[in-house]
Amino acid sequence: MQGAVPVDGFTYDLLTPVTAFCAAALGSALGLRCTMRALAVEPARRVAWLALGAVAIGTGIFTMHFIAMMGFTAKDVQINYDLPVTLASLVVAVVVVGVGVFLVGYKGRTPLALTGGGMITGLGVACMHYLGMAGMRMDGAKQVYSASVVILSVVIAVVAATAALWLSMTVKKFGVAVGAALIMGVAVSGMHYTAMEALSVHLTAAKGALTGRTPAEILAPILIGPVLLLVFVGLFVGMDPLEREWRHRDSDGRIPEPRGEDPSVAEPSMFERRS
Image 1 (cartoon, helix red, strand yellow):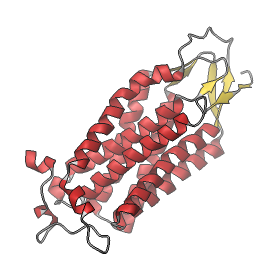
Image 2 (image 1 turned 135 degrees about the vertical axis):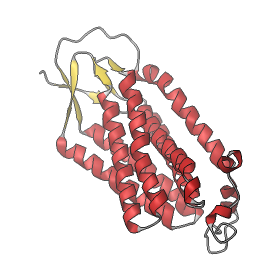
Image 3 (image 1 turned 60 degrees about the vertical axis):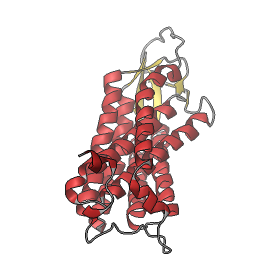
Image 4 (image 1 turned 45 degrees about the vertical axis):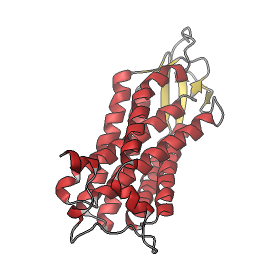
């Protein structure tokens, strides 16, 4: 195996990291709001909201990763992506994050559930990243990772995701909820760029001819579906009645409890009205 080649994670300067962070924060904000909405309805009606939350967070993670990867290049190495493996990373993100949000959704705001949910969500971030990287194909080169930095990247994801989940589920102020989404965005972005620091690209064979297609041109079509999915979830959450309760919270900054003696009598969402 030949020596490492220079790599650049910021080919377009700050454009890709800033856009990627915004995607991660948006997906996290929507997912956390869906999880909170699930806690405001009876257990039998939580599944749809929790599933939507998992889709939002998982899609945000996926979108963040591949927007960031648009800015990743290795000198004189053609980068392509295996589509089945790439899409599998999206499924893995949604499923693993789903385990975390369902744990919180059905076990409540207990310390054990919040800690366990945060840890699993953080692991979902890491699983998506490394599976997404496994789908990257480099002609005549291979990826080599520093184990210690890989471990650090996973720790960053788990700690920040746990903190975000704790904040969003235990403090009912709008500003805190925004802060939780930003922390989750930091978790995803911080994990990604820390993990990329663990990566070096080593030549294994003679360099092939470059096709001229940039990572941005290859990845843009893959991102169309996930981006549209985030837009759909955003529109759906924005039309939910809980948003009106959120905007008209009481003077203590808490979201008013659902009307009646239990959460099942809260104003129905679009999910409940359709059922």
